[in-house]
Image 1 (cartoon, rainbow, N blue to C red):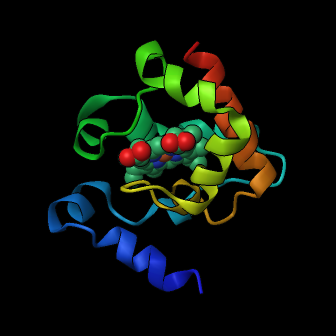
Image 2: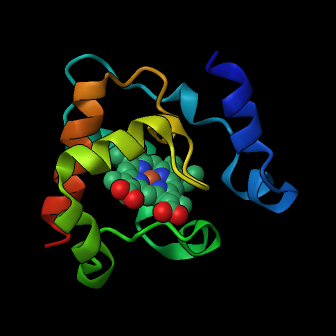
Image 3: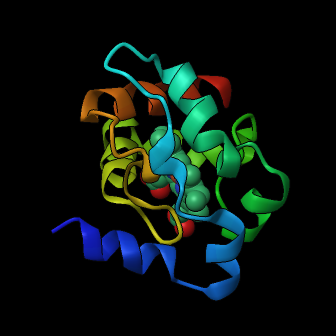
Length: 115
Ligand code: HEC
């Protein structure tokens, strides 16, 4: 059952749900979307710094210090967390149409930008 966990994630805090919203499912990701495209459409809201990043505590892409310990864990470990969700990060970053492979490609893109 994926739905209850999504709802739980979205309502972790009234403030958070208001700021982050649960509307990322409306993205236009297709089977051919690249990691970079998926990042821009689904992940940048939290992972490019700014207010949402600060609110959620998402590691900012390009912040080498933040990504060093993550990159050290390896892409596979990061991908597993990204698919399942971790703390304030919803499963697959809210991208319901993203395949596991696409999430992996997106994680690789984000890590590459943050080395
Ligand atoms: C709603 C905000 C939000 C969105 C959208 C989001 N993330 Fe995150 N992400 C987070 C937060 C917060 C963390 C830090 C979680 C923690 O460790 O506390 C995180 C952590 C991560 C990590 C590190 C996981 C680890 O191994 O600890 C990766 C990789 C990641 N996100 C990838 C993605 C990808 C790929 C997407 C888009 C498909 C995405 N995120 C979308 C909030 C978000």
